[in-house]
Image (cartoon, rainbow, N blue to C red; front, side, top):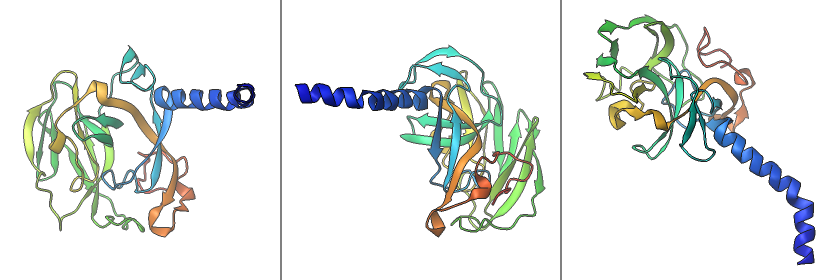
Length: 232
């Protein structure tokens, strides 16, 4: 017992630090690894994104229980989702708010009956990303502008849907890599309780195709910068 007491006295500061860090990462802020290319070109494979866990709600740590609603999710937000339908943590872009009418026709988005505007981006493929080849466009709708990727040689079986009405308390999410993203087209609408945080910036990035070499140009980079491949 004396040895256990001595061990506790020597390690309690470390235990307290780890405990507080777990609470902090659960309820305040965290960083998440992005293992897939579903959000290319905005988020690259190997990016570690900074997640603001208090962007929308103050939650009981380690749970989905909201103590206080702080802000409403906004169209265009990049959101982390603890999806019960997909059984995994996902990162997608918020396209449809509750009450919105959303449709897609051959990868052309319509929100509340208004067609999104598309302009080509003259960008080279992302070296080091296995699914980098494709066409890059700027998609603009309802005050939101961001980059998307299309793969004309591998059309998605779900490049058209709707129109659908987003139910109360739920959201429609799509990946920026439109032909290679499992999102609301596969899993349906995502409830507010599953939206765990918002991300706007890369924390740091490692290149899995080159022995996890650091991509220093992406450290701290904003995700929706004027040039979506800044720091590539």
